Image 1 (cartoon, one colour):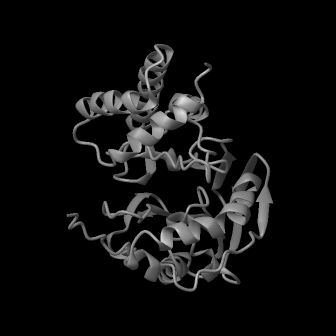
Image 2 (cartoon, one colour):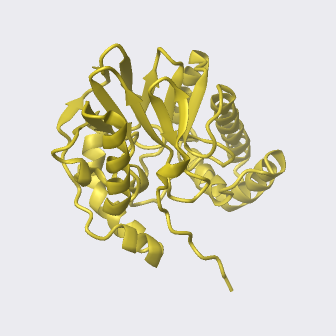
Amino acid sequence: MNDYVMPDPVVQVTGAQELARDLVVVPDRRVPLVPNIGLIGGTHSVLVVETGIGPENAETVLEFAAEFAGGRKMYLTTTHFHPEHAFGAQVFAGEATFLINRAQAEDLRAKGPGYLGMFRGLDEVIARRLEGVRLVTPDLVYDDEYDLDLGGRVVRLRATGRAHSKGDQIVTVPDSGVMFTGDLVEAGQFAIFPWFPPHDTDVSGTRWLAVMERLAAQSPQVVVPGHGDVGGPQLLADVRDYLRLLRDETWTRRDSAMSEETIAEEVKALMIARHPEWEGRDWIEKGVGCLCSEHAS
């Protein structure tokens, strides 16, 4: 019998951490379905990164952001369309300009309703958090890259192409060496593969690895993962190395015509032995399934 009780995914702004001048992170506190949330300020504008899951959390974030902004213009962006990152955007309507990349906007439009239903079915506490959610259309959409001038500080928004999702976005603050990665990077957790065939197969292990190789080469000073503790460039290297090993071990076994079930069992055991302290072990099998589908057989 499973006695696990899902903790309430509530955003708490009281633990906000200052990473640099006029740049704070509201940490996830290692609570499932709570993202790390960023606020980045310039002389005339502030950018909020992520909303939290549902309107009530977003209201908390907006109130905190308005106080942080102190009358400055506000923008909102999200690293990808998944519910804990973006399903509070409606609360910012009229208060902030919602800015995302085109692929993410399409994800939100086409797949948002399905994810809303799926997440509502996960647990009663999550369903309550998602009450009253309305999926909104962004105010500004860019194709591949957008430089947002906040006043004396430019924030770079870059679409990565298909990886964890089709619409992943990296947010970097060059003057402070800070990078927000969304769920391309998790700290202390196996990479989240939303591999749900036939309903959602947009995640790509091979493209994700290529993205991580590019990001690791940039060597930012501070990395804010989608979930988990803020860290340094080693977080990028850890995910890159994990994805590379996951691909190699999966494909080596696939080459020998081993069944996918056996591959998943063996690779999962290997990865847990390599990272016994990491959470999210169930995502290993999803990653194996995704990479099996990308194997050139």
